Length: 219
Image 1 (cartoon, rainbow, N blue to C red):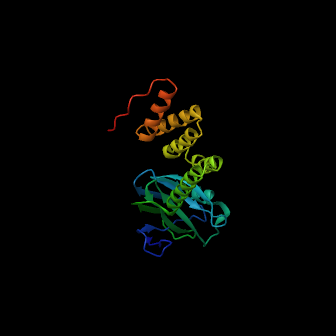
Image 2: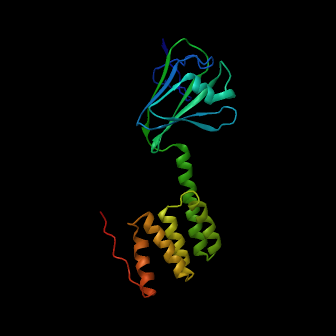
Image 3: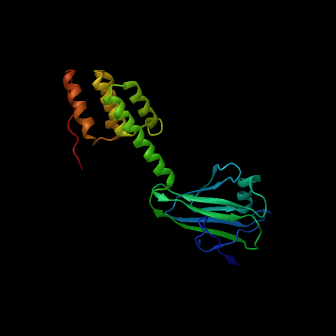
């Protein structure tokens, strides 16, 4: 027997078999497939809002194992949310009941759409805000405050070449050439095609009497 669940936004979900015996823990199977493969499958604890991992697609778990993972967060007759997500795709959310419907297998088939989810959009905006403030403080010669804003980016994204290069440029303006060279080299390691870092690394090496690196050829 099959029945449809509905997306949290109330639009129809893909047809899926009912979740069998999740509350009672009998030997049914919970299956999650996705396009693309190797998407992350997790559930959201309704009491804490915390996302907890179940595995990657294609995922196949006994319902008793799902019940154990969910634990006491959801009572029989209630719903919990399963999230299927992959980098570069919009996440899909499914509302799953814990009541028994008599089927042996429950299937979720998530067709993820290319795009960016709300969390990634918010993070990108925060990064841009920090870089804008860092540049603003640097132009005002408030170098310590500029570096604090860059720390906020690099703590989350330690190989973000633009932030590494901006840090190097701030040290260059302060005539801290050794420190500047170190950060430009980190930027080049993260992105060998970053023109500012290529040019400034060569310039500092020439100033120091060293050998400038060969230009990096673009593909």
